[in-house]
Length: 374
Image 1 (cartoon, one colour):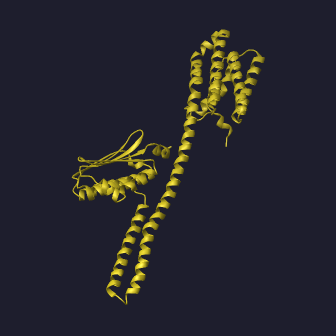
Image 2 (spheres, helix red, strand yellow):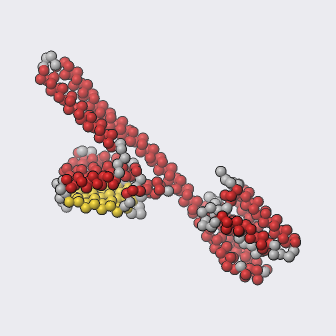
Image 3 (cartoon, one colour):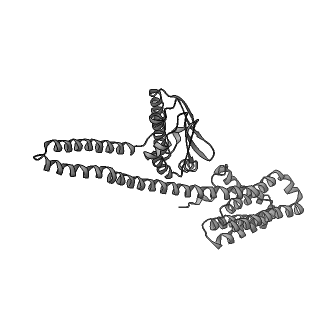
């Protein structure tokens, strides 16, 4: 909702009181005149400017351009007759509010031309009046040049930030839906399969219990083993649904490598406390997967974990001097799991396996972090 005080431009670096002074100043120039008709005309035109400014402020479409054209005319009249050019600043800010690129350029050029032309004409008509306020005239011309562009770019940036916030919210919603689908798939593929197996083996054990006690006992042992495995998988699923903090995971990785007697180098060149939760959870899970495979399979003596940030992306590097675990990652679906998690945040995964060692490099676009902070 727009209120009357919104006609004063916001976020300009100038106090509201300064704008009020700009509104009062024309009366100082008007009442310096000795002729009553000049004073009356000046007051009437000043009040007309405020009325037109309010009309333009509350209008849309072609009416905005009509209102601005009238403001240009008032600026010219007030500048030539009374040497008052400060209304051009109000008009300059309003020109910056025009969202159409062609409309903005047209009004910007017209405003600049009319303002400079009125000041030039004023110098020829009353040289002394304009010379006395030369610094203010220069300030006004600079304002007419710079303020509309600054206002236009600021509003464009705000529009982009709103769009990015909407995109971020949609990404979060899609991530929630995808996570629910993943949980449903896991329940169907793992827990459902285990329970089906338990049911079948229970029926078989019931049939064998009187005919073949040893075979029935073997089926019951399988049932016990399967139920334990199902319980373990359920616990893992519940654990994966919790938000994982990257700082905690880094400490866990450090303890894990110390227990495995692997020399480690932890380089964290980013403020992890301000990392978005979605990015933090995905990077934490990928870090856990990569380091766990290094400890279990690589037989490495040294491992480097590096978390850095550039202007474009956040990078996570896990590098060791082992013989490589890419085949095991593929076999255990570790690599595919990391790729699926990173797809939620438009991240990428690069793996290199060489005689010198094994390297996992993960990158996440920095734009996701800017949206959440906006």
